[in-house]
Image 1 (cartoon, helix red, strand yellow):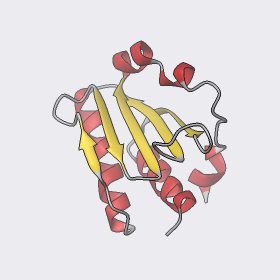
Image 2: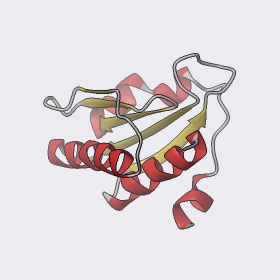
Image 3: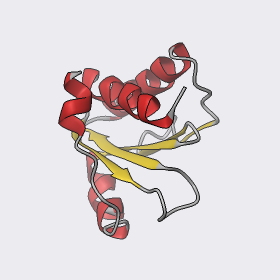
Length: 118
């Protein structure tokens, strides 16, 4: 199982739960934490939890190990660590506050449309 297949699985799962402003950053050569960061948000606590739950479920169904799930109960910023791919699922208000896109602005964006459509 490769990291690009995991990225595709994660993006499709987030899209399925109607994650807002979905994006993926290629962190290879930039961060030692993961090869890809997926960032998205939900408009309510329930939607944030539903997105995070779907990411975890679909990754495990595809045979990937979810190493850590943090922040689920608070549903403000849920981190889903799958090793090569780390997903950040924010509540809308928290996303603009932390602005990870700006923090990791030197990371190239992944063209996610082709991955979601396949």
